[in-house]
Length: 256
Image (cartoon, rainbow, N blue to C red; front, side, top):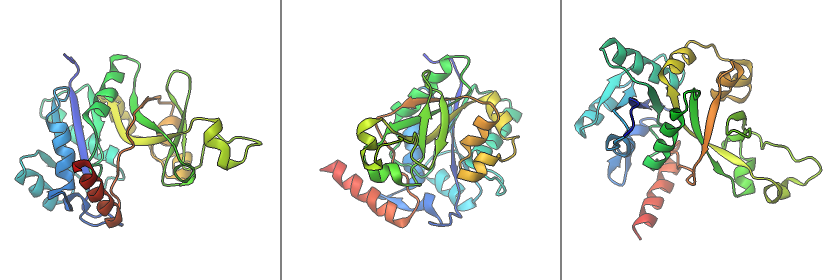
């Protein structure tokens, strides 16, 4: 049995630019946020799961389907900051956790096996942060700036994340890159050692982070290590109403 105390936080904002009210949009008859909650709430390796929101409508919806939610500041710049506030509030109430998972509230098809893979990284006392990667199989995926690419060192630690295809293959036509070199897409679920998370939320945005608009570069620039585990599944994130329609189709295909 896992001796670590693990907290899962699901940040959920109402005021999304591209899809206002997204966490409450219905997918297969249930709010998107409920899909994510149900994935984690039954996991024996998790001690607590909480939706972190800045909107009363999301708070009430989560409570209505039997989930746990906490109001957090509307000033947070990232889900990581929201996770940090939840951890701070729980610790002030006497709760202690070793590991905190930041689980996207807009990825309804997250697998429990993915989260368990992240938790396992913390059996190594040196692990500070853990995340996931999956293989890229098409040039469209590789070239899209919406797909964040990651390169790792020999011990599975992230060297760099970029919206550009990395590594660059000199002297090879880009259309041939995938046949010459494995490329990996970052799957944006994070797990943090609790003490590390408290430090991360104190950091100011860094130059590389501002350049690529990728928060994880702030951590690398400040000397933190990020352990990256492979996963076979590239989760379906829902950022727009069109993504929601694609997720509905995915659900229908699963039922066939």
